[in-house]
Each structure stands twice: as structure tokens, then as C-alpha cells.
Image (cartoon, rainbow, N blue to C red; front, side, top):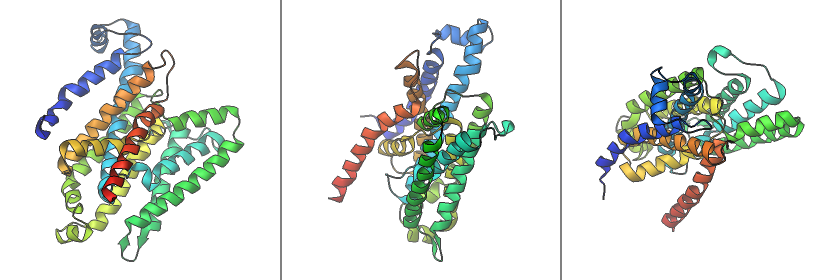
Amino acid sequence: MMSRRSLHWLWLPLLPGLGLLSLTSGALGLSAADTWAALTGQGEPLHSTVLWQIRLPRSLLALAIGGLLALTGALLQGLFRNPLADPGIIGVSAGAALGAGLAIVVLPGVGLAWLALGSTALLAFVGGVVTTALVYYLARGPFGTSMGMLLLAGVAISALAFAVLGLLNYVADDEQLRNLSLWQMGSLGGASWPQVLLAWGCLALLAGWSRYRAQAFNALLLGEADARHLGVAVERLKWQTVLFCALGVGVAVAVSGIIGFIGLMVPHLVRMSVGPDYRRLLPHSLLAGAALLLVADWLARRLAAPAEIPVGLITAALGAPFFLWLLRQQQGRAL
């Protein structure tokens, strides 16, 4: 049986191999030689255009978004000490969906090009962050932040946001309704270099902070009281985690729409492989999430070629059976 230590080396050949598969696959088939020639500026003009303007930004965006979603999922599972937690639990996905709905139906044309965000993406990001801030405010009390209240507030605010979103669906015309539906399914088809830079910058920030705080999450596994005795500023850790997760998921949802289950599924699978130590769990969740979304995006382009399936449907098809299995495992432990 392969040891946990040897599992660490699997990422070295896996990610470049998946990246090459993503770059060579599509409506225009490219061989590995064609891809290399286009990357080095020696290929045909059409190949270079397809690679540099479409496939390379899309593949890099898939890596960044997958890493962001999985990393935030691992952080929130550590914060709640519950493997069923995912980024949507703090209301950021619902707020982002509401923001996108407002942009498409009520406020089309609002955007800041220099932020790499059009009107839909910009208001989705703002909606996600504002909703998360409201959830955190409601969970604050005289004795600190209650995780139970944070969960309940997230559920309530998410329900309210989706109710308003349902009203927007009701009053939208046919074109607006189609755009809103496609955005909620998640897609990497509109990837651009500014979006890639934005997503990778956010990922670098979140990865650096999580590496710095990994030991604190290890202490939190013992419980909040024990973590305090070990010198962890638990309240500071809570609000920093919520803030960074809202930022990461907000950026991810803003540029790609809602892509579910990665933040739930990946950290749990990684935990089974490398153990609960957050010094290993967090970086490996990032890498596994990046790999999974790259594979899901490849499947989205290949399964119905030359048409394209929204990548959020692929991750849902992969994640829903896993979630049911995870629920069954948790039920077995409860019994």
C-alpha cells in the first residue's frame, strides 16, 4: 500500500499531465508537438491564437478556482470542525448569486474593466462579501462568535437571498433568464488573462495566510478552550477565516459562476489520504481542488463536443454521490 508520504509526490507528474491534456483537447485538436510549438511562438498562427487566447487562460483559471474552492472548504471544515461544511455555509454563494441576478436583471452595464470584472462578476463579488459580513455580524455575541449561530445565520440569509433571486427569475425576460441560469451553472468559458491574474493573486494571498495559520487550525481540532490554552487567539482566527474565505469564494464565484461540491468533497478526500494535520491538509487540498476542476472542465468540453456542458453540472454529478456517501458515513458514526 502506498504511504502517505509517497502520496505527496503524485502531484508532481499529475498536474502537468492534466494541464497538457487540457491544452490539447477541444474543438480544434492539437498534438503535444503543436502545443509546444504554439507555446514557444513557433507554431501556426491559428494554433497560437487558440492556445494563448482561449485554452491557456481557461486552464490556468480552472487551476486557480479549483484551488480556491478546495482551500476555503478545508478552512471552513476546520473552523466548524465538521466535514460537512463547505464554502456555501457562510452565505457567500447565495449572496453572489443574488448579486449576479441584480446585475443581469436590474443593473446591466455596471462594471469596472480594470478589476477584470464585468457587471455580473462585480456585483456577484460584492453580494458575496456583503452577505458574509451580515452573517458574521449576526453570529457575534457578547461572548464571541458562536459557530452554531454562524451556521443558522448562514442558512437564513441564504434562504432570503435565494427568495429574492427567485423573484428576479420571475420578472426577468427570456434572455435575462437564460443568462442567469447559465451563470448559476458555472462555466470557465469566458476566461481572460485579467481574470487569471485576479484569481491567482487571490489564491496566493489565501495560500500564504493559510500556511501561516495551519498550526492554529491543528490546535482548534482539540476544541476552542484547549486552543486558547495553547495560545491561539480563537476569535481572531474565526473572523480572519471568514474574511479570507469570503474573499476567495467571492472571487471564484464572480469569475466562474457557482461551481459546487469541490469545497466539500476535496478536503474530505485529502484528509483520508494525508491525515488531519493542517500543515499537509491545506496545501494538498489546494492542489487536489485544482486538479479536480481541471478534469471537470476537460469533461465539460469533451462529453458533448463540439457543444459544452457547464462545468458546475459536472462537479455536481461527481459531488452529489460523494455527499450521500459522506452522510451515510456520518450516520454510521452517530449510531
